[in-house]
Amino acid sequence: MKCASIIALCLSIISCQGNKSPRTLTPGTDSCHYCQMTIIDERFTTQLVTEKGKHFIFDDIHCMNAFVQETDNSSLEIAAVYLSDFANPGQYIKPDSAFFLKGDNLRSPMGGNTGTFSNKNSMLETQAILGGESVAFETLFYPSP
Image (cartoon, rainbow, N blue to C red; front, side, top):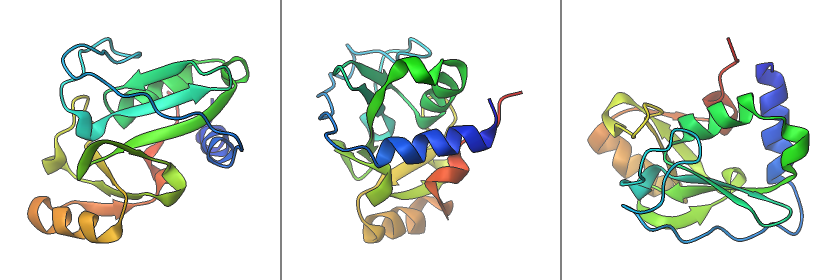
């Protein structure tokens, strides 16, 4: 699947009406749908929710990206994408209202090293401490090999 297709899919997902709510996670118990690692750091978690209400939980935006690339997206019927607010772990926001900070010092579970923030000030405060660069949601997806 090409990068443009992934971006188009994600943009269409965030514009869907009637989105399902994110699920409350239990760190130490829930695991990533893609890599099967136990979720420990809720600051980086993401969720895809289908039209039927099935939740796909990921420990890192990197795992969500890989899952989307490797899955037949037409069969998923994704209703919503949720990303944990780095500054308020467990509070979920949608990509179209989020700010993204990517940098090696964020050290996410699977190397995506991207934090999502509900407001720009929180992102800038974290950036002042950990460095990194502000990025657009669309730039977080890489083409499949």
